[in-house]
Image (cartoon, rainbow, N blue to C red; front, top):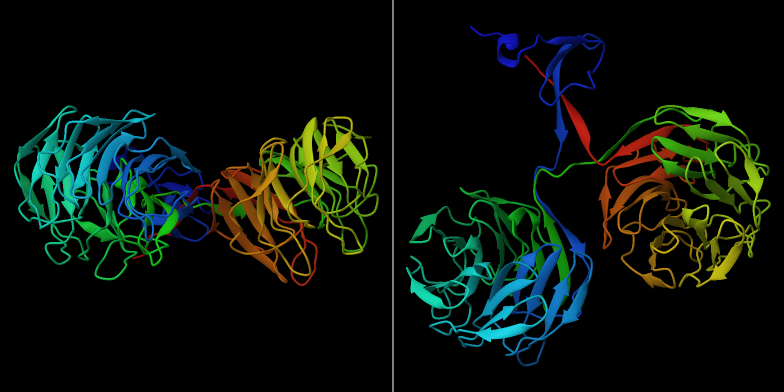
Length: 593
């Protein structure tokens, strides 16, 4: 009988505690806890949806094509209006109106692997077909049979148009030039969902036949074959993907549905629901595991967009890092996880001028700030940084060269708890407050020598967080009045625009990342919290919490590797702990008898 070494080529390793460098699935013996264990990636067990930015125009009964971050939607109808010719382009963050269809219509569909090559057909009982080339629509050869409720799958040069009103079983194949009738569906239906990569490989599910059906069929280029059904019968639903990786979402079951089911080539499995239940929506996605849902009927019609990520996505987590040498809160932090800096703060008894450097495992004390202060702000790198504002000396700026601090140009408006972005020679300081309770909207730019006032935040806030650069920044959270704020504003180099709010309003949060990929860590909602949220350029979602709730801490890094050090705890003690964030994490499984 083969033993472990015969199978994997090595003996079981003995280790004093968890063997953190074990390969995925590698068995080891934990001598400290006296058990056999192995480690494996921590990933999501089911797919989930995340909000994207709304379309410019709410509508339903329209077509969609392309991929999750490169999609096109077209036609449809607005609430109480006639058919539309409107076309919009999605780049993964925002929608832009582009050239219209030649023929306005609703109840149409289309397909294409990207937003630059799309075929759209049917709608309003017509047979019209149009091709999109990335700039404009061109009328081409019509379907042989005009009908409503057709579903289209494939790409712009190789597609299928299947089903339609009156429970049609018709199936037509597109070769880039013309349509040809091919073998019918086994079950005729109207407004099903679909996926597919060509006119020889497709899947169709659900639809009206005449009631909502769960029947699913796959196409091999010659004939349709019935396969395992949807778990929940639905019609006018979204569909995306391929015959081995498809997604069915939303629809009428009857009644508006948010249900989502993934297809793995054999069967459907329920996933996380849409946030907004809807029917008659547009969909896109080359793979079901990365799909897009846009608009649809929701009483009233919605403009909302949602993005789906399939099961198996990495789950981020915090782990313990090296402690600060001096416990304190209201300190500044910047840099990255393996090269961070923390300076200033309040020790619980006095303001601090202490500066410490982090190498990814431990902190080392280096030359102090000239001015001890709390609620100080900072930006830059471990070798070229900036510290400014705070209490007292709220206009003072100091420049860090990797060894020493030197005086820089003063802020024009003294304040504490500013948000920051950028580097020493191109930095921003925005918002802030003062000991009298005043909140500021001022935004100042630093050029390596002096501060210049530029366009203000839309909403004055103290203790606001910031990430990004001097031309692409984000300002979130803070104190905008008597209470905490969830507001989030985006900076484009000349002005601020309100974008998606935090899920949990708070001030004094830790922060890491960029304008399009950020973390909001911990903070104060009225009590100190451990909540962490992740920003994808469009919306915030809650991810793994800090191990210890904290506020007003030093932080820096990216959404895949960040640090969070010190801060105040509940009910007000100072912390020296450091927690390191990783965008992916590993679990240890202990084998039992």
